[in-house]
Image (cartoon, rainbow, N blue to C red):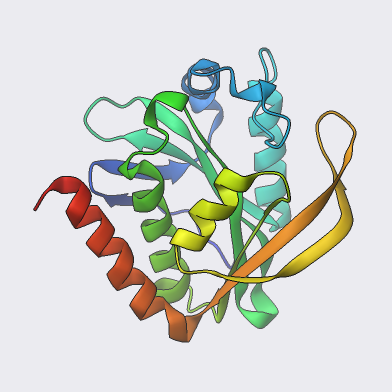
Length: 199
């Protein structure tokens, strides 16, 4: 049995469902909203690359190293982007959250906060993870700020760690949250969403 079993997570008008080939057109449209593949510090599929992107994610799911979700608007069924558990380590009950990107039109909205709340809640409360981690490009300052807003702690920087899409070599900034830190982080995320909703 896989550590991360297929599951659909729903809250706040958002649905995270297992990424499938059926999401190809919606995912391509989300990537085209802002031409996200032009951003050198992300791994968003470019035109004509979406099917291969999904197939790779499915192969990684089969191998047990990644579980990708499509992020879907509950009301309209529109695919807003994608996010994943990855570097899944059942022996130490650890997952990382990444491969995250959203259509430009929903960036800086409640979407990322809600999706992270769902994923962190499932990781800590259902999977009983001891640690949830994140990693990002040293030049992806927006991602670093977003991760820090979740309450994650910066672990350090791995220098010369990975290739970017333009073949330059990036340093990777690592973050994590331990299970004991989750209740306070959850309370803060719920507070932020309440402020967003004006209630």
